Length: 247
Image (cartoon, rainbow, N blue to C red; front, side, top):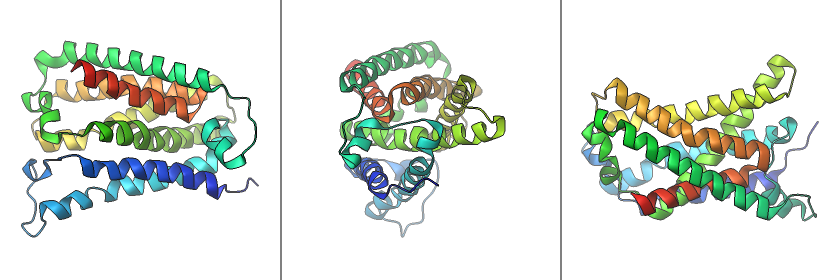
């Protein structure tokens, strides 16, 4: 039975926690959302309450990923080397370059999807960035790091493990199934916030949200499979950098 690597778990969890904490840098206009909040919940308290859900997700994903990733041949080679302090055969340049390339491609796809869907989606959704007003560091740390720990290290790893148990195989279709499903889960996870922005979202707006978020998720999942979690993190973070420069 494989021993639980607590030091590795701690590194992953602390990285994810840093991303969660970065939400405090952002001026989230949650009080102005479609849902009504009790008067006793002050804006200051609300800023900390919104951290509970992502904190729990990062914790669960860090645990699940640490327990299962090696069983299904998924890796975080750079972070693992910090724990083992041993020479590994990973190529840092390869991880970084493919991560940057993946992030650039993801950003281009998202921009194309935005252009195609803009005439058909809700005005409130188009101006969502103005409502959420995410700090650039939040996009990098929470979007790039925490969301990858949740969606890839946690959800995708679990799906690969589960599907491999069902099929009794670790062939390529198992990984592709997990990549697509985890990307879909990641995309669906954005819908609650969208419905808070606009309770009457059209079907085209929902399709836009799912398509746009899945486009990046598929690329990030592939990079996690082939190059490790760090490459997926770099890609996700760089996607936000490119979008920040263009939009």
